[in-house]
Length: 353
Image (cartoon, rainbow, N blue to C red; front, side):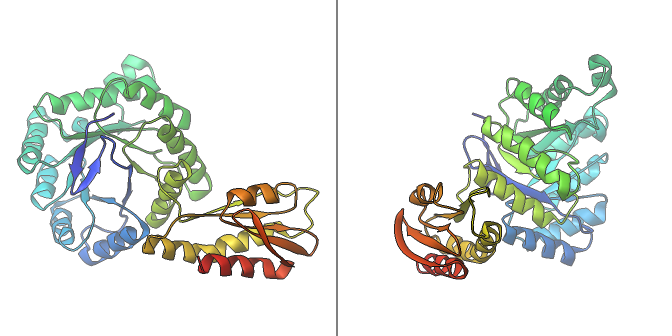
C-alpha cells in the first residue's frame, strides 16, 4: 500500500478511494471562465482539478478562483520556479513540477521550501516525451525501464531535500509500455501514483486506450489518483474516468444495464430496446445517486435462452420474444406485454423502486 497524502481535503493513497482528476483548458487568467469550468467539472464528478500557470497573472487568477470553487486546485508549472512559488502563495493545494525543467537545485529547493512551509503535496514525474538526455542515453530509447527509473530518480531529488509529501506520475501514450513501466515503478517507491495515458488522442482512440491502460493498472492494484486525457471537452474526461472506476468495481454504479449480444434467435429489436433503456435510465440513475438510493441491475435480453437467467440476477429485467416479451422482478416473471410496451413497463418499475 502506498503512503497517504492530503490534497486540499482529498486523501490520495494509503487505501483512499482513487480520485478523479481533470485539467482546465480555458485561459487561467480569465478568472470567471476558470471558475465556471471548474464548477462544471465538479458537477460532473471531478474531485481534483489542475490548471496551467504560464505567468504571474495566471497565478493571481488561480488565487481568486481558489476562493470560489469547491475542489482542490493543482497548479501546473513548467520551467519558472517563481511561478511555482507564486502559485503556492496564492493557495494552490498541490503543485505539479518536473524538477528537471525547473533549473538548478537551488531553484528546486526554493519551491520545495515553500511547499514545505504550507505542507502541500508536490506531484513530480515524467512522460515518454520528456525523458532526460541522460536517461535516453542510458537506455538507448524510451522504454518502460527508463520511465520507471526516471520517475524514481525524480522523486529522489525532492526526497534529498527532506520532503516526502509527494505524488509520482510516469505516463506514456503506449499502453503496453505504460503498464510495464508502472509494474517496475511499484517496486521502487511507496509514494502515491497518479495514472493515465498521456496524449491518448481524440475520443475515438483515446477512450479505448484509456480504458485499457488505466483499467489494467487499477486491476493490478496500481493507481491512487487518475486522469483520462482526451482531446475533447474535459467534462468527458471526468465522465469516462468515473465509468472506468465503475467498471473495475471501484465506484458503485447507480444503475447497471446488462444486455445480450444479438444472434439468430433474436425476434425482437433488441438493439433499439437496449439503447432506449440506457437513454431513459440515465437521468433516473443520476437522481437515485443524488438521493443515495440502492444501486440497481437491469437486464435487457433478447430471447428465452439467456433472458430468464440474467433477469434472475437483476433487480428488474425484460426478455423479448416475437412482438412481445416478459417483464421480470428479481427473477420472477411479472407479466407478458407487447414489444412496444416493454421499456415503459421497465421504466415504471425502476421509477417506483
